[in-house]
Image (cartoon, rainbow, N blue to C red; front, side, top):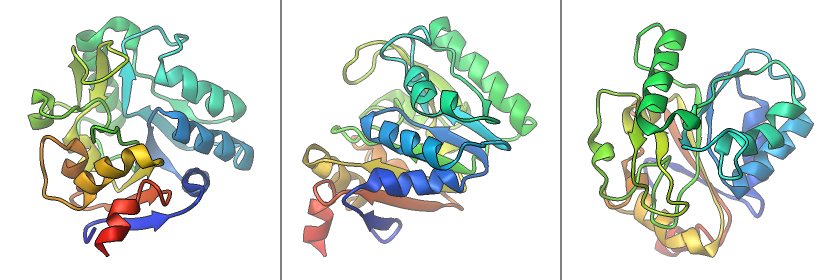
Length: 229
């Protein structure tokens, strides 16, 4: 854990909401039930999101109103409850390749052709230690040029193709925050934060070069890290 700050809370979603309330610039949001609770709380605490660009870490290749859409979840939990945010949706309905190309174009337009430097990236962590839609052992983990990729075959359900940010974009962020809860994630947390970088644990490859790295976790998710202390 020497490279990351560990913050253990009974309700880490509340801590993530506080970060979002104070966020500015360009923020990338993730899917998942725990982040949804953070978004709902942030919407209550901060009705005005002027000056914030909302991006997405990944998306399933479904229509934006589909039950598996990350955008649909974020829209309902946060975006339709606040004003002023500039939303940059991954167009999953275009399919993985075209959708990724369109998102690359949007990133390029926003960042002037320079590599994207997001101000905050909020990440979840899968039980297999995947992040975004970057799964263990996938060739996409080795991508160093493109900011977004299409993933034809995801490593876990729902088994629909995806669009994802790549590791260089995540690691170029000024702040990266993992939000992880539950005993089922404890092994993935250990593999990601207490071991060596390993493509079989994509979370272990998230190490911002010039930014900060924080793990917000509940006691159950952080149990194996606590045991190492």
